[in-house]
Amino acid sequence: MKKYLIVFTFLFLGMSLFSQDTEIWIKNSPEIRMNIQNTPLEVRWRPIDQMIMPDHYFGKHSLVRTDIMFGLTLDKIKIFNYTKFDEFDRFWTGVRFDVNLDFFDRKFLVNIQERFFWGLNDDSDNHYYLVQYLRYGVTPKIHLGILSYGKWRLDRPFDQGEWFVGPSAEFRLPYNFSFHTAFTKQIFTTNVYMWFVRIGYRFKL
Image (cartoon, rainbow, N blue to C red; front, side, top):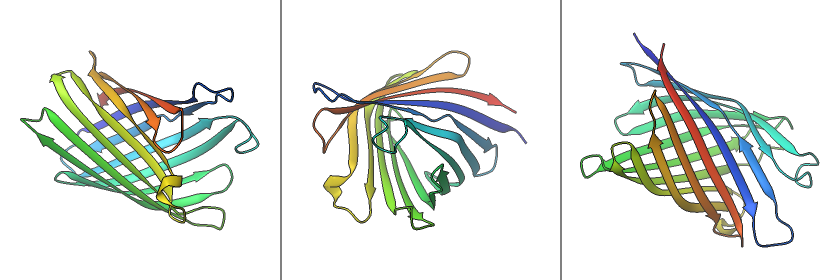
């Protein structure tokens, strides 16, 4: 039985541009994925999910979280149990649904993710994420598309959430490396942007 281990590194840069109060947010989130060949099982672990930002948000310049996911693939759908906790003793568990569709001989790919989290203590709010990733293969190794990423609290109106949308590009590189980047704009806030970068490497165990 062969196992596949995929390591991703994420870097988000969120910028409030064209204003005197420009803010730069940096999100560093390495992810380790393990897929067991010939089984539908998958494990994903983000040992350090760190957001670096101005200290007026949390009284410090960074927020550190840990995520772990246990998944099952059913045809074009993946279902995960998703648990996370941070350094402020906030603790959540929830469910993540991934739907992966392809059209036109797999040249046009659609990935839709929904993540629902329930707080396990009084300090942890209930919230959900919606991720939409549409891409078209202009060559076998280059995909261009649109990335949409949003987070909302369940007890607040939809337009008080965070929703970023923008163009993306994904490249398959030699020696099992891959590179994905996107530049997105906040829909509900003026002049707030997020830059996304993912570097991946795949190898067999």
